[in-house]
Image (cartoon, rainbow, N blue to C red; front, side, top):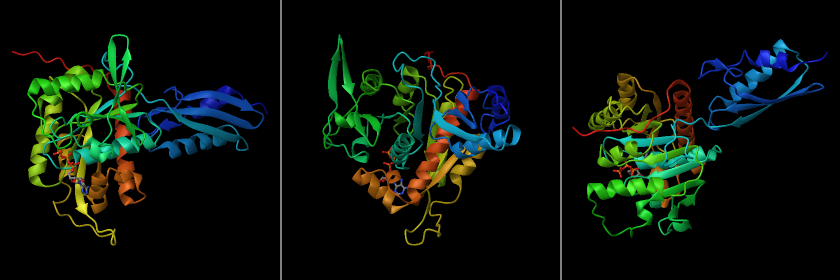
Length: 365
Ligand SMILES: Nc1ncnc2c1ncn2[C@@H]1O[C@H](COP(=O)(O)OP(=O)(O)OP(=O)(O)O)[C@@H](O)[C@H]1O
């Protein structure tokens, strides 16, 4: 029996991407289809290498062909990716497909810990990832990525001098902490801080990135405004701890992104320090700061809940030692891996369903 490409595509046309709610052929995800004797090979081009449904989609493709074309065929889907872009050509960062802003209402809720592990987890899936430490007033990236003593290089290209980001754990990193001695306090005036951010965005040789994770200062600040005015932000992720005082502040942070004149899509909420779990008794959970505060807030604001991270001594130690917890083989790394998949999934869904992000133009009255 001769099998045609049309028969295969018809079968694959019944396989739906569960998130994007359209079939793989309509979404243009099937590429390089080849049939040779009894073997069918094709690429499934996913919207992110961190796709949590990768295995499910692969199996569905094989099943559809076996059921609808011929059960004896050898079906070999190659799962690959091409990350979709949210940006409407931002001149400052033309090669960066998605910018994920990580924010929090209060300080100390673990925003930098979460953003560091998120960036490393995304890079581990095969994505090209950058990390901008925009917390000019309290940079922690040099410590958390264990590159406190590194200094970025400079490269001249015609009139332009590029800053070369530090690379660690597969992530390209830029932080003011690389340029100032760790023990000398920096006193910034608002405009200095905002121009530093602009410089880090536009003068750093980021190259091609699938995701740039931006660790913002806590609260709402001129740095937030500077970021969204200079580049088109794909979406924001808000980190909170479950207790009431943190939630109240997180609400303000979230509401800022949802203001009509700002309108940055909120990709979701993350609840950090959701519960304490002792290493020797991982089944036991103690809700020290209260239970489900972040989850309930996500429901109230109608934004996705991206996951919860427990309080674990290892996370604190990993931050201090500059070896992100996601790199260790433990329940903590699973939690961060899961979180990264969920964030990537929300980015893919956002890019499939919403218009490209524009930079925010704020006019003063
Ligand atoms: N899930 C966790 N379990 C244990 N320790 C944690 C966890 N999350 C964060 N920490 C620790 O809490 C401290 C504060 O975390 P982090 O610096 O990430 O917070 P932050 O919100 O970025 O703070 P700020 O923006 O005010 O600098 C750090 O010592 C970090 O290691």
